[in-house]
Length: 439
Image (tube, rainbow, N blue to C red; front, side, top):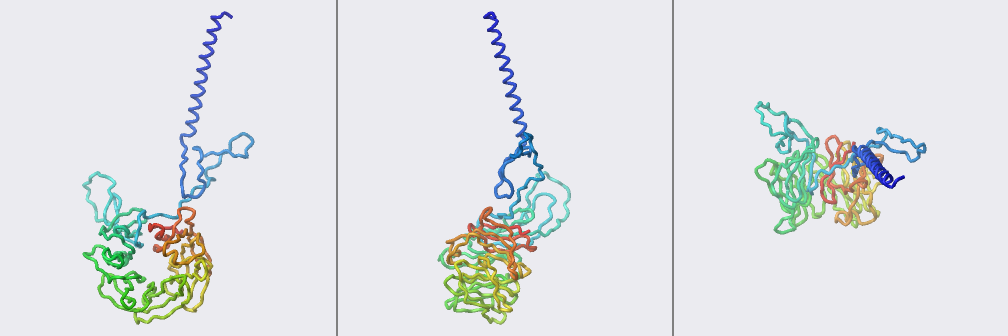
């Protein structure tokens, strides 16, 4: 072959090869792009099920398939992620909270906000005459911001929240809602002395509030939340006072030279008083008749005693630190018998159901031997809770959720909504407000 012909042949061969190679890469890139265009490989934390990213077409190849063919897994057979039962309501610390059923204007446009405000969804003006607004009842939760004393509310059906009071009272330690959550008692340390407890009572929409006596060390609300019982320190001990929200009249119903009490207003005319707990001290619980002023010992000689009575006072859930780990037990006030629930925990991490039989408890899953409840009160230990429904008669437990599988919480100040489908609590780790779905 002539030298000139060879050169021409080589040039043609190189050109043809370049064209074929370019076409190959073009087709490969196009096919790859088309396959992945619909994929969604986002990782969803704190959800159950399989979180391994899947291909965009929902297909998978079996590792045991030796035939060389691809096996498609039906979408219906895949495990769907399960939504968490835990819901963080606030990302700020709260001093107290309460469930209520509030009234709200039915909105034809915009989004209804607590406090009677409306968030518009359109700026379009209309000249259509609007009929008088209808009113609906909506489940809600109100809470006091710890840093400012502001009162906020969240509608639980829409999860819309808003500020309903911006009266500033800084550094609130505790807050109690009464009178259908329309009245609130704030407790905070006096900025002047630093060790005097101030208690200020106010009503939403009211012109002014009122200071209770200094150094109110304990407050409990009546079953219908229309009244409250408080213990105030005196030079000789402590006095127990009964007040109504919106009424200035106060009635002294109790006096004691021993000042370290915790109260629970159980029935219309009975307040239970329990000595403050320590693992080194025997505790006792008494029943105080606020009509006659007569107090009667229910039981005692229990170390680390904390108590929580049911709604008719027939059963008392209590915790004891007789062993290295606090245990939950039931005391029957009628036949004076004790039933061991064989469950570790503290009574103040529980709440009774309205049926007076079942109890919802936050049970520490990481509890170890120690001085309880002292070390927990002092913040030396923090619990990671699982939640269970406990039958106080049989001791049977139904597991609800375990926070250690998600974001661990240490629940305190528990309360329920009306139909007991939700449990609310304050996380002791950071004082944020949470809810837990019970169904």
